[in-house]
Image 1 (cartoon, helix red, strand yellow):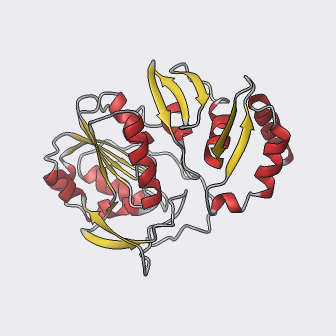
Image 2 (image 1 turned 90 degrees about the vertical axis):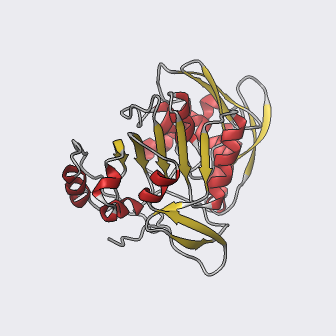
Length: 286
């Protein structure tokens, strides 16, 4: 982190917490531990309330308060998570160590998708925030896939906290129909590739064809943020993709073949240029 970023972080934390010095010290002292297991912090909010909350909430609360969006109001840190109003709808989220509610609700990166009265297949839903976003914006049903048990447990909790009943939660991955063993102690993070473990939970992998057939989807919406599994679309039959009206994909290892595939299926395609980054958890299998 550069000096400018450190100074900015200092003032952002100071703005939200009375005991900002202690929080900064703990963040630094437990910077490695916090990436391995949940670390709790005692925090004193500026209104005087004292809470004991996990690392993910401490940092997310600071970030979210620094993002301007006219659809967002009343951001609060609570014992159950972070609450706010989105388009006047009360939302309560418990962010995991690796999650990005910033992108979903605050930057609205999926605003492009016209989900109203349509079925949405949410591949890589992480903690369920994107599934909630689609539901609140009028989706008929959301079929959410998340292979990592750690992140999936947060998705279950967040859907329950918000009393939403049109989200179908699947502890599953996307790709060729099969199964994979996932270490239950592992959690999804930016750039982490889904790799089978020797021991863990047996997780199903579903193809798009299987999902469309099982849930009888017509003119659906597809969102993909699955750290490399998006390239399994190249193996799907063109007729399968004809059941999808709109797609938004976060690609990781180039988009040339994806663009070609989608254009061959009569999609109008726009894409952004990649941002280069290094992540030791990533595994380029393409």
